[in-house]
Image (cartoon, rainbow over all chains, first blue to last red):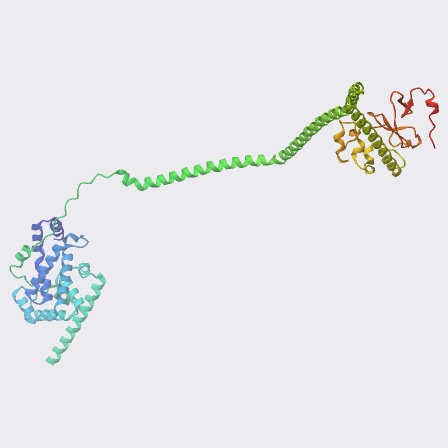
Length: 188
Length: 313
């Protein structure tokens, strides 16, 4: 996919609209999903997705292929999201209904109800993380970018990404321990 | 829940689907930047422009080398000139000596030329002196001739011409004046001898202090010398006098009273050593030289020599 994306990107730089359209087809779902999880509603996510691709076409001539097209595109989406976030005070966590609805509409990997509830709880805790750790979790886990790709998209070192992810997991573990302790007290 | 479980759950996070129609909108909004135009054909460039820095540097180095070569040439020429001048300077003392010798030779030559000129001038003056010495004899001869010619018409016109009377009176007056002159000369010489061990002066001019004027040294009948009588003793020369001095200078002629001291060749007046002046007829007396001294000897007196008195001592 990366090779084909690079080829399409080269053709798009030469003005091939079909190649650009093909790139949109390849990446718009991932970018929309990334921005949807961050923005919290479909309208803003669609709007941010359009802005991301518009900025991509503007900056296409400056793309030097130092990273993969996917990484470069996620970096643009990340900056578009940051710009949007600065303009609007967004930060509200996703509602439990949204995560549940996502599980209801799509096939889920969780077999039991308990596992599904635990996953929803975990996703909500991720939204409670601070912005830097949340971005690292979204890009690495949700968008399946490698550590180096995440680092390039965020514009930080890979070690920094590792540190932020470890901090995020520690936070999630603590919250999980707290929930388990509360449950045991209720049972008792 | 351990980390691995959490990571698995996170990796399995649900992926929200994009709304329908978003793809078309995105595809419709594709606005690619204009493709970069192919680079223009390379324009022809003057190859000298590319090589200009190297050429400029080369020209600079070449000019520097040329300047160094020129300066080296100048330096060599200056060294050669310096050596030449030093060699010339080494011979300078010798040349100075030669120059000094040459100047001395030139000075000697000029002095020699001047001496030759002086010698020639002296010769010419000697010739003139010789001529001047002959002049009084010539004058005397002319005076005698003049007198002879003057006496001839006087004799012829003696009876009737009244002018001859005045001429005779003039001649007599001049003769008397001539006697007076000799008297004064004798007196002056006597005074001078009194101051000089009774020796005659070598020249009458030595006794000029004893004479009142140069007129006494010129006979009034000596017309050729009359102008000399107007001169002072400063310009008066010995040969300008009309009288002939026959005494030996520096000799005590006082011991020979009959000796002739001076004579007038015109009037035949003689100043004698005893201070007297005698006016004689030359036909009856003639001058004789005895022992270097002149005497008046009567023509008809054969015993004159014996009769001549011996010197008074």
